[in-house]
Length: 106
Image 1 (cartoon, rainbow, N blue to C red):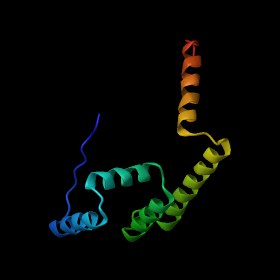
Image 2: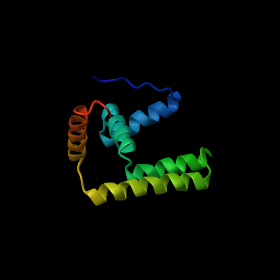
Image 3: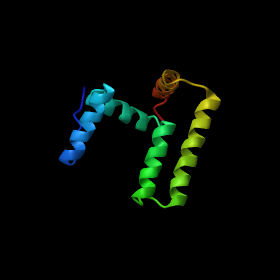
Image 4: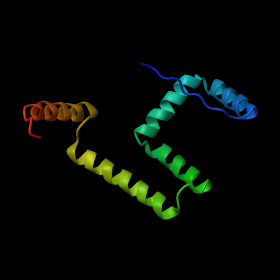
């Protein structure tokens, strides 16, 4: 099931945004979907943009922002050390879920 995402921006910003996307040949829906996927998947390039935004808008202090980036990097190292794809991780959860169902006391 698909969901609709709505947002409000100034008219000039909207016109500039649409014009830029049209210049690059990217539909708005494709652009937004890609940005959201990058954000969810902790894309390194987008994380730098998000960190810069947080710094400019004073969302978190520098120490807390660095802490967040360190935790993300640590999580990536753990994932890389096990070298599991998303499908393999889902398979592990499925196996665990099926094993646990047999134990009503848990």
